[in-house]
Amino acid sequence: MTVEARPMSHWSSVDRPPLVIAGPCSAESEEQVLETAARLAPLRVHYLRAGIWKARTRPDSFEGIGAPALKWLVRAGAEHGMRTATEVAHAHHVEAALEAGVDLLWIGARTTVNPFSVQELANALRGCTVPVFVKNPTAPDFGLWMGAFERVAAAGIRDLGAIHRGVSVADSAPFRNAPMWSLVLELRRELPDLPLLCDPSHICGRRDLLETVAQRAMDLGLDGLMLESHRDPDKAWSDAAQQVTPERLGGILSKLEVRSNAEDPVFTASVEGLREEIDALDQKLVELLVERLGVVDRIADLKQARHVTPFQLDRWRQLLVNRLAHGERLGLRADYVQAVFDTVHEESLRRQSERMAEDQSSTT
Image (cartoon, rainbow, N blue to C red; front, side):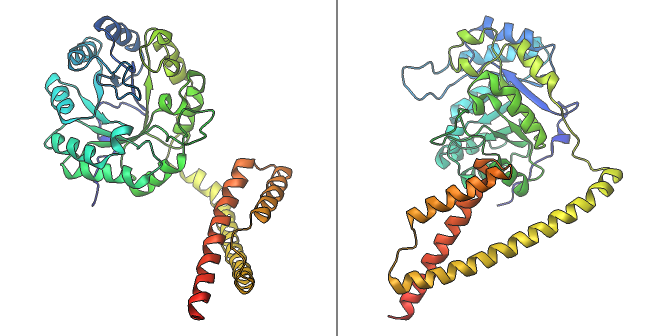
């Protein structure tokens, strides 16, 4: 299914990049929403956000005020010249938010992971003219994310966008959710015109990392940011550690360096030679990988003849220690070297298993 999305330049609310959506994680009281909005107003915030319904892990946690808080959000946006945004997880959320006049809706990560829920929302959104953004699922599953876009697009939504909020993995330290920027790059390849924002608040889970992740998002050419801001973050009823005051948010935004995606003729001429060097090196790299797999095939034949399993734990440990040490001597990060050789080793095992299975079938 084709996903057609209007590029960010279509959005009249954006005078210059990045698009900024900011506000409290949860709407707690009318006074809290109005005060936060008043302090955000001097900043370049396009959309005031607030959680109305909150999907929480534990049932005894604060799960949002619900529909009555919609009028607080809409009033705060109107009084301070900001459009409004909130998350929806059920059809009745969509109906209530649209009826209240909310300007932008997003589908949260815990909803994106469930195609049944996404389809329910898509059905409720049919005929809707407000922008709809979709957060990546909590699981590192690109297909689920694409499927959500396709379902929403099939409902006729063209003002469609994406929000990258990281993924839940076993070890995401120092982040709450691992950034896994590869998902962003893959989405850019698949849907280059789709507006793409980053949610540093949920990636970081702590306010001291927000500036670094926000800048990283800008360096990758993302179109905007969603950041949680509260009038008194330490007293927030949900996700206190990742929220900042409006004044601190202003400091983060003021320090962002937003670089141009355009390549002027002088730059292109200067960098072209270096790109040719990269192309030549990449070609050699691919040829070396093919040569390496040739050796893997010969090892597979020997293992097959001796009835030895493809995976040899001691050899893998030794190989990894040696490669990591060699990479460190050459100034490469250990996680980079490990990621490369994890991929290389996985393909080697797959190749050996397939070759040994083919040899076995040919002899029976």
